[in-house]
Amino acid sequence: METISIVDAKNYVDKKVKIGVWLTNKRSSGKIAFLQLRDGTAFFQGVVVKNNVSEEIFTLAKEVRQEESMYVIGTIHEDSRSHFGYEIEIDEIELVGTSKDYPISPKEHGTDFLMDHRHLWLRSKRQFAVMKIRSELIRATYEFFHKEGFVKFDAPILTGSAPEGTTELFHTEYFDKDAYLSQSGQLYEEAGAMAYGKVFSFGPTFRAEKSKTRRHLIEFWMIEPEMAFMHQEESLELQERYIANLVQTVLDNCQYELKLLGRDPQVLQRYTELPYPRISYDEAVKLLQKSGDFPDVEWGKDFGSPEETYLAEHFSKPVFVLNYPKAIKPFYMKPHPTRDDVVICADLLAPEGYGEIIGGSERATDLVYLEEQIKKAGLNKEDYQWYLDLRRYGSVPHSGFGLGLERAVTWITGEEHIREAIPFPRLLNRIYP
Image (cartoon, rainbow, N blue to C red; front, side, top):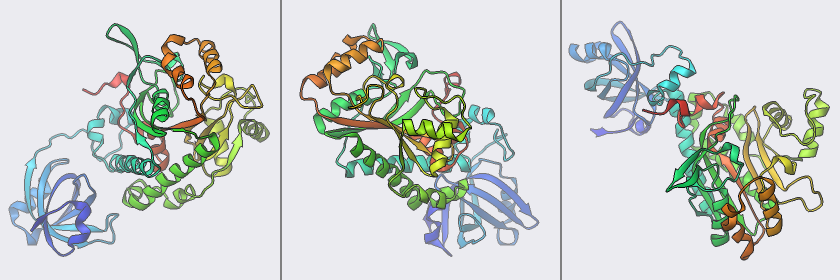
């Protein structure tokens, strides 16, 4: 008799097996007890028939409590009525760990309550599905960029400079010097690109900005590729291939998780169709104004959640918005060759109301221009001398972008709220004990 995982049940139909599981829920109907079980790979049902087991086992099956752990021994059967397709008819139960007064009962709970118990909330079906898809996206990311010839290049978490503006930094001290939790690894990735051609980083980033929207997290994980000898158009082509690849990977490998979430695969399939639409910021402003739904929209302002939602829904698939005003973008973006008021950049907006999932640009290469922009941004030029060296010694056209993993996961899984989708990262006022 083999010890297996639930996910492998399909390979053991009509065979007796042993599985280590936790109980998520139960019900009984006279002489049959139905146990809802999980083991970290999948969820399925265990059936205990009174006439086929000892009195002790049947009593245990009726008395076992939510989240108690056990070994079950029984025979795997197909079950076309279930979401999983298989169940186990249990002959024996060996209790391993007890659980009394488990706080997350099968009833509905508010998000605040669940966030306070997120170390246990991870065990629920929706969280299981979301985190498994998140893991698959990470695996697919590494595979995609390695196939594209990228080198994994890690940026530090503690930095001495700000890519995105000093108002969003968490300040600390590092050996008596000012240091900040990283907003982005981009500047360091540019150094990597000048050494290795194409690099990408994957790590935590932090934003101290105050926000009341569902879209902003204090801590999230960012995937940031940077490419030497690459202009913006080539970068956009890479970005859309990357996103389409992520979505297709989930469709290929996470059908069970999508079913648990109730996510329609046909909707996701639409997002694998390339190319994605592209419009300029100018065109986006006109489109919003023409709709009549956004009377406050005017050229020069950044888009908020409603505007991004309208634009993406207008095209029913991810859409690139190109060349935003220079005044609302970071200092490092390359100026437009024929216009002084915009920079060469693009945001990729996801449909269904999820907003920007990628922000990217071609990077400025002119040393004098960058020095001027650093000064205009109110930054200390001395902190950026190493960054300016990248322009002093063999500068080349280069581009890059960043994908916020949590928002991409929320979009692909179809979750309604970032906090509901991802129990980690944690909010600062709820530090994990």
